[in-house]
Image (tube, rainbow, N blue to C red):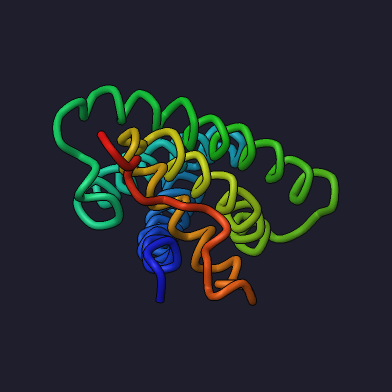
Length: 164
């Protein structure tokens, strides 16, 4: 399994843990504290964002976390936070208020629809560490784009420049 797939698997595992956090918090807020669903959803999402950020720092991108944690947290909130908060709130409104889906399946669907955009933002911007991140991206492309018929030459040369 290449590096990108391993990382996406870790991202997905933490995402599922976040799903549990979000659904438990949403349920507690709406059923125990009787908050309206549209008020409870952003609170549940914010707690999930903090949970996921801490786990991504330690598990998904540990080699990219030297220093600048506050910058990454800010980027995580700006990127994944905006996608998750706005996406979940809008999708929950559409699914529950307009389409009359049940809250739990609607929330699961909203979470799933935001996941891909969140991974791309996290990998390419939030936990971006410059040239090393670009090298991994190039390695992924060259290994997946097949070592075509011309003697197995990769389409993208991700090796360091020669002669420097």
